Image (cartoon, rainbow, N blue to C red; front, side, top):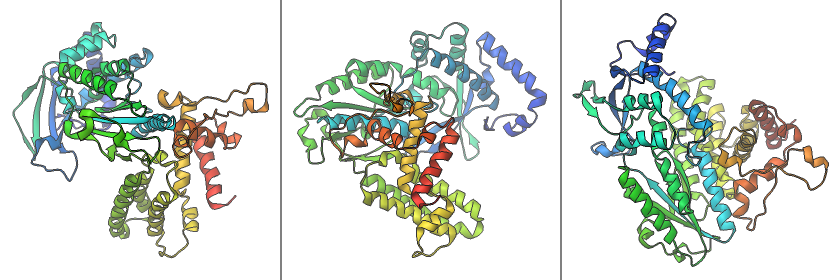
Length: 503
């Protein structure tokens, strides 16, 4: 575990880890005693809250712009980790967790969530439908969780009972908190509601608290995807159709949230309408009370979407921020070795180029060229090349795959993970193995079925359609890779040869 604990810890976490071989048996006794009796020690339930500004450009005089991060005793985090592993195993075995909740789950990410949402929207518009996407954000969701409701849902929906439920009840009750700022501490106050942000169990308990939300959305036949407290709700609508089912669903959600002491942040509620083609007018869909929230572009999980899926706003944002940081990195280059400077470039530049880059598949060549200019500039800065020096030999020397190949690499990586149970189930179910009608040599080629697409500009960008084509074009030796690391190596070598025409 990371050596992070509370400022009030009697023994610093780093020192405790160093002497663990001597005191490990005592800690084991404390943990086993807590688990067997269903009681959490009182000293483990005091949190020191350190407010952190959500974004550097926000007004620090507005309290809502801060996130309250709880710093808990290191020993309490060890106990929480033990409980988390057992609880997560139980939930997975009994398939309790919401499958369309990608927050706080292994193998899940913002990119996997957006891939599924993009795929569904592409397929719906490919069928000639409009799609209404509604982005919802909860206000202070972690801080308003009602403990009694949470315990009832843990028992009724998750099936947790007996000593395990007693332990969770003890974990939630009699919690205290104080605030630390500039080395000073406030007085201690009881924590009657909420789950601690910064704890290990808090995110998992919050996900279980939201379990009834999925049932409400399914009852109305509305597609959705959640990432922590951010929710994406989308519904295909025929031309001239009504959003009444969506409004009815939204009202039921608001009623349920009122009973659960939750509420939407209306300032962050946004609506987008996607048409079957870029020439379709989104205003042809009557949104009713949702009209004031209609946007032409939105930021969804840190990725800018627009109604025509050209992604110009996202590309411009990445290019602008990347060049800004690249100009700053030039100033520190004299103080770093080449190896360390390359690491810094990957941290500040490559990470931005690679964030959700699988969604760039099918965008215009001009947009990809703008992203490629960023990588070219970073490579020239790293090696000290002039602006007019040919970039291909530089990228080949650095073993940096060009942007277009990095996009294909990411997509195929998701495919391999999906076929080997290392990806979210909502992605794996989109890929179907190819089954020939009669005995053919292709039966053992590990090929994928390619669904039909009605519209080339939209449908062929869907994950379920574009990925089988890319996968089937790979050599059989790569498709048959026995592990993820081997697959990555073979795929990089394959793309490296294509990118730089080398053996």
